[in-house]
Length: 325
Length: 308
Image 1 (spheres, each protein chain N blue to C red):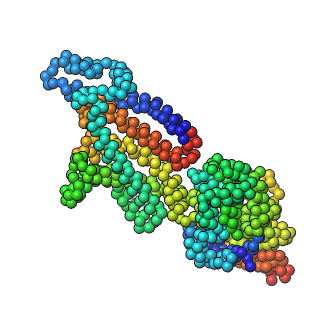
Image 2: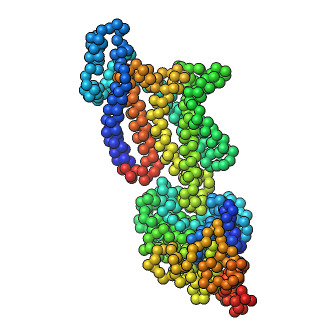
Image 3: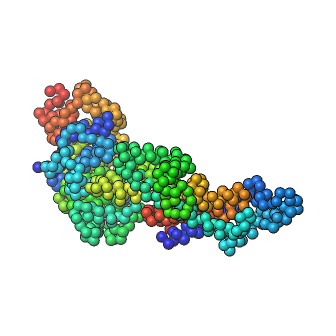
């Protein structure tokens, strides 16, 4: 059974509907990549799973999120809070701003152990330093007493990872954990996270827009486009026989380490705004394979030759173009 | 931290010098002089000139300043021309009243202001928030002398709970402290509320929620701590204001104090007293700012390092 099971998740923020029917599973010990351009709903999906939508004025309008059999959508806040940081942990996007600037690094990691594991101050400190060592933070005991501004970006991100690991979570959500870092450190941080997850048999939802990272690290991939799942597939199938034209475009952009990170200039057109999504398939205005039907009908997420894709033009399991079938 | 403190203290020396010049020059720029107030009607110009010379007011301004500053360095504030007392003893009689009133009002506005501001920020958009905001609006727009009169009317005249005026008992302090303090409460509450709402939107607060930290802890141990930085700044600026600017309140409640002394001697152009009072206020403002800096440095390690 999947550890995390998201079914038909829709989210609204005010009158906007940035997530529309997202479904995917994360099994025990699996690393699932969530890819898509900025604004596709990756971070919002993470916020939904963390139960933090109210903080940004968002609300689940339909669907369910089940974690280890627990229905998170109806879970009362105090019990949800006991889960956050304990069984589901977040590694945030920007380590520069994710730590409280006026509180010592150590206290911020210790907080998790004290809160969730009921550790004494001394035990929590020992545990934090131990985790910091595992994350290859040099002079962990000294860094424990430092303030965030005294550390480099890479070190801060390791501290954020240490906070996430402090209570031995089962599911980690890494929301673009390296976007804010120097290119030289990015691979290193991803490697540390992946190694830890593999060693401990944790599940990881890895949000990124870097298909290269996905290729290195993930078991499965969920491709999001404009608040919907475009394609969902195993790692080999995604790269071997991508079903959705958008996935193909993403893959086409991979080996370009000379271009600015995050700028997917390889795909013509721009990501549609949540205020004004196109009708039908939201990718059709940018799609080279678009058919007449694409502008009118929303493609369902269907089983295709391998995995699932939401595309009228994709060859389905029966070997026919669904739009003509 | 010691390093930080020394640097800040050293920085105060040039400020003090400049302030002393300004204080001295400003009062001498005002038309009229104290001799007009003590000279007897019908005196000859010669008699007036003799008096002027007696107090050294005939010398060039720069020389007068040098004499005054030289005495100041030995701790001598000079002799009041009209009141015929050492300025230092005049200040000694009045300053304690201002200090007690000021520090109580400051403590009142700090404690109540931070508490109500934080409550409004935590319960934003609720009736608590709206009530606090209404009181803040009232507190920052109602002139304090009028509020003082109202308080006297209600609590002293009608209810008879507190004395109408004077400074003879502790109960006489209640109404003036409330009157001055309420404006401060409004100011502090507004700054606290805005700062907390601003900080609650920062990434690290989101991260604290993601760690499962209970909201009351996030609010009190993290957000409020950050919000104290701007609050400390306005409070430190207010220290000088409360000592000197409470003058209207001192008048309303007929209390002695630095403000009343200053206004009286200003009207009579009693230069040494005015200079002494202004100097005290300037020192209060400088110490207030220093205190604010120190508290900020204690709260925020980045401030410590920037200057230390």
